[in-house]
Image (tube, rainbow, N blue to C red; front, side):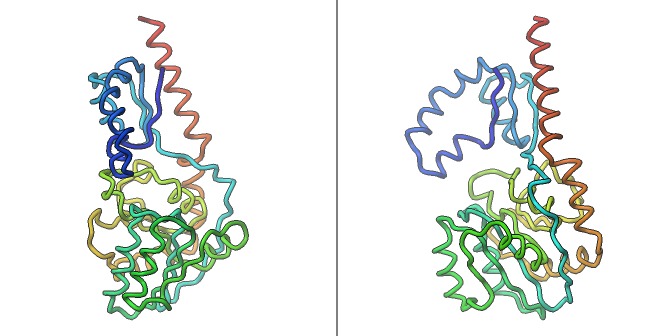
Length: 272
């Protein structure tokens, strides 16, 4: 058998306050993993965890980041950026690990000349806390909450915004690497984005990604606005991001890698 893993289960169960499932994981995880022939995970960090839990670091494994059906989302119409008004977009089922409070705190501290607005699309457990934070900082005119949006309404928001916001707080659930579906959608739509973790599918130096520190510091809006100016000055950036998504993030690419790995595991079992 080959198993697929999206998280470090013990940390996720603890952060989600599920003590019974955490106890079951602690008691039986290694016994189950000993019988597994290979592991598929979305990050190397998760793969290392599963191998260690199995007691055999030589078991076959594949690190295969999450994929997206690129054709399922439209490429955006790129808005002009005049260096004076910066529109940020986050689309999420908003939770603590999205770290939007870091961005709002950064907006409160920002003293620059760019008018920054944050558009938050989606519901979620963290939305009430963010609304309180926005009220405390008197940022009601700079942070807009839309609730759940889809279809044409969502497409229009992508068309008006300059930079998208990925997860900025994955360190809060004890992971340093991510494979977030939403940033893959951002890439497929052709909108540069900021992100608070490393991601196997976006190599170091990927030009359309601004990595921010994985900690509790407020987000540096000067760095974000400079990033926006650099990337949006290339009028072809959306097309280039779309092509990258087709070549690296599409499910067809991901499934090909998975099938090849499954065949390798099967062949190794047959030879024994």
